[in-house]
Image (cartoon, rainbow, N blue to C red; front, top):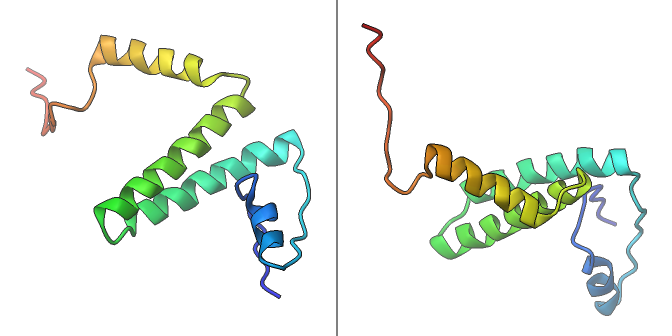
Length: 108
C-alpha cells in the first residue's frame, strides 16, 4: 500500500474510490493547512522546473496558481485581494514583460 502523506486536490479521494481503491484521509487544522500548503508550493515549483515540455510546464504553473489561491484564502484574503496587490505593485514598479536584467548599480 503506497503512503503519500501529502495535500491533494479535493476530488482526489473520489477519483481513487472510482478506481476501486480506498483512500485514507484526514482534514488538516488551519495551522497544518498553511504549513502543508507551503510544502505543496515547493513541490509544484520543483515539478515546474523538471517539466519535460512546455505543456507540462503550463500544467505545473496552473497547479502553482491553485496552491497560491489556497494560500491567500488560508491567510484570510481573496484571490481578488491578492490580484489587487499584484496590480498595485505592477503599477508602481512594473512587471516582468520587458525582460530587464539588472547587472549592477554604480553608486557614484
